[in-house]
Every structure is written in structure tokens, then in C-alpha cells.
Image 1: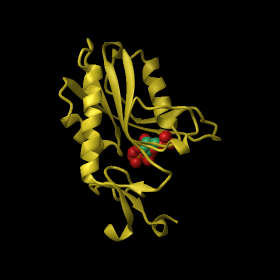
Image 2: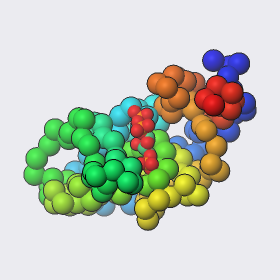
Image 3: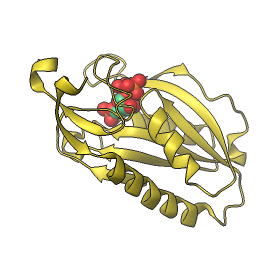
Image 4: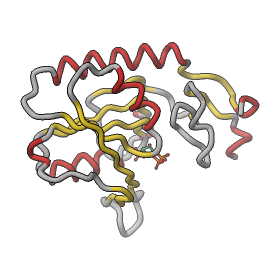
Length: 181
Ligand code: PRP
């Protein structure tokens, strides 16, 4: 895989530092919550980030998984979200929800998913992303917690894929253009 990498963008040490800082902020915000916290891991990309982050959260929490995809603009389904794996929970008014994502790009996935879970009457819905590409935003969306803002580069690793590969790289790296063009 290394031959396909242009350069490392966020190395393992930087990721660990980011995760520690995010965990501190999250713990500060949730330490006095009266509702149980459910961390929702959005498959597949956020799996590795979420597993590292939650180990740093000294909070009582439960873990659930969702797999979703958003329809882009210009399709007849624009504005909707497709749920491939739904949250195995009811009575969401009894819970605080924290959605974990690897990256925010157009903003469609998280803006729609946040709205969907609010519509299901969750007590609160917040979002945490490792990476954000604000220059790519197509709908207004600001994550509650963000590890790092990055330029519009094609990044892989630490959960992020190109054609389902490279997710197992331990760092975030920029893919060589010749690999995907
Ligand atoms: C990626 C990423 C987010 C979404 C962000 O998922 O994990 O869920 O795209 O893009 P957006 O802000 O434009 O909506 P992807 O659909 O590639 O699935 P994966 O996590 O299984 O790789």
C-alpha cells in the first residue's frame, strides 16, 4: 500500500493527540448529563477512529452502529438518507446520542442523520468527526467536535477508504493521484 501514498497528512502521534483533546472536550460536556449516552459509530469509515476515541472517554456509555448513505443533490431522492443498518434502539428520548464520523465532506450525511435522530425525539444529538473538509460543504453543517480541518485532498487510512482499500493504514494519508484518476 505504501507505494500508493503521496504523503502522510496526520500521523499516529498526531491522531493520538487529537483523540485525547476530543475526549477531554466530550467528557467535560457530558460529565453531568442526566441521560445515558449512546455513541453511534457510523460504518464503515469511523470504526477505527471511534474505537480509539471511546477508549479515552472516562464516561459511562453504550455503543451502537449505523450504516447510512446520503443521496447527492440532483437525484429525485435529494434530501433523503438511505439507512443500510439502523439503530437498534427505541425510546430515544431517554438518551443523549453522540454520532462518530471519520470525515465530513458535503455535509449531507451528518446533517440528514442528525435531523433524522432529532425527529425520533432523542434527548440530544451531537456529532464528532475526526476530519472536516469545510471547503467541500454543499449543505450547512458544523460538527460539535472536530479533530482537524483539512484541505480538499483525497485522503485514506485510519478508516478512510478508496475503493474499500487502505482503511487499515494506521495514519491518514494523501493518495497518489495516479491511483484514483
Ligand atoms: C463517507 C464518510 C461519511 C460521508 C461524508 O462515508 O464516512 O459518512 O462519506 O460525506 P458527506 O459529508 O458528503 O455526506 P462513505 O459513504 O464513503 O462510506 P464508508 O464510511 O463506508 O466508507
